[in-house]
Length: 145
Image (cartoon, rainbow, N blue to C red; front, side, top):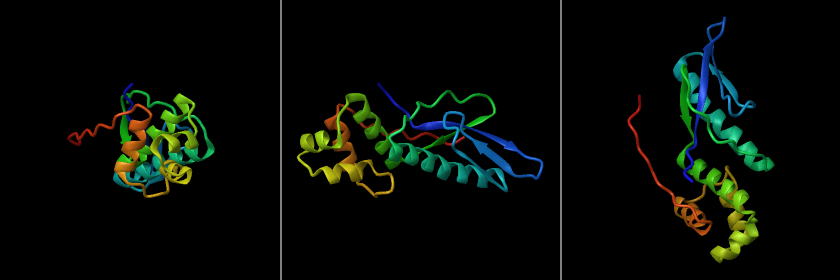
């Protein structure tokens, strides 16, 4: 199953001129900016925090809904997306970090760091972990706009 980590964001200008950003799929994620561009930059950070919080708490991470009219897509950075994909793969297969560590021949703490959104993991380590749970990483680069 293919999974994208690009969530639709709704941007509205309030009465004070700020641009408010919310994510329908992640109700706890909301931010703003003085300009549309600043709001979108803040939205990317806000999305990272919301996903990191869900991973840390062991909460569900919903699939992104379709980007409707008046919404803009906000993507997780590649490493965050890989960590989120690994988190979901472990949940889907009922594997623990210890189980994955055994498959990889690694220490369980190494696997826990791969799942930690704040840890600067290497893409190759995340890719190997995802392969160990039957996932393949594919990079897609698209034009902006």
